[in-house]
Length: 254
Image 1 (cartoon, rainbow, N blue to C red):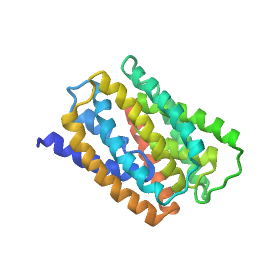
Image 2: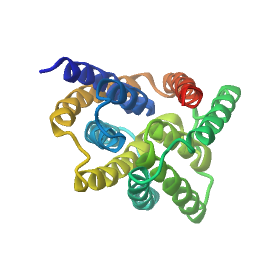
Image 3: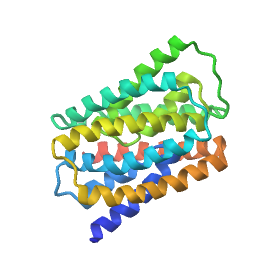
């Protein structure tokens, strides 16, 4: 096992832990891939991260499903739309630069951080006041947009999904985190299919990283289920802050 692979596996372990709770594991994995394996095309590095991300997220979804009740009628619709959006995003990253997207994402993240911090009870108590039609429309809209973003760039997708489930569907943090995992599985599968079909996956790195991501996911979901919404909210704010700093740095150093 090379030094590069050891470092990537350790990063993947941490990414799986964070991602299983609140999303944002890509904030660790993607920059690590870019720094440790700079000799490969960006599309190849993005494609390689999809396998460990998929493994950890799928495990987290399975774990949450045993403890959290979800509306699978709405969730299935969101998954299908997000799948299509992710396929389109994966295609776009192979032909266009994602540089122009980052300033927009940065502004959104800052607004998200301020809103979450100011709303002390946000995501602590869920409600079910929307009609089925409104849930489907709202879910389809944010599912496609975030799915496209995941295929195009990736980092922070789980965080955006959780925020969307809380904001548009009135979920609490735990339920939103569980639902986000199912959608994230779909977006990862869609992007992975495209990247695999175009030869943009380094399996010698992806498979060992997947095992470590899985271990991190096990530890993360266990902690989330034990600690509940208040803990997840605090971690959400930390991840959003880290995401803001990451995107700001990318824009300044570009």
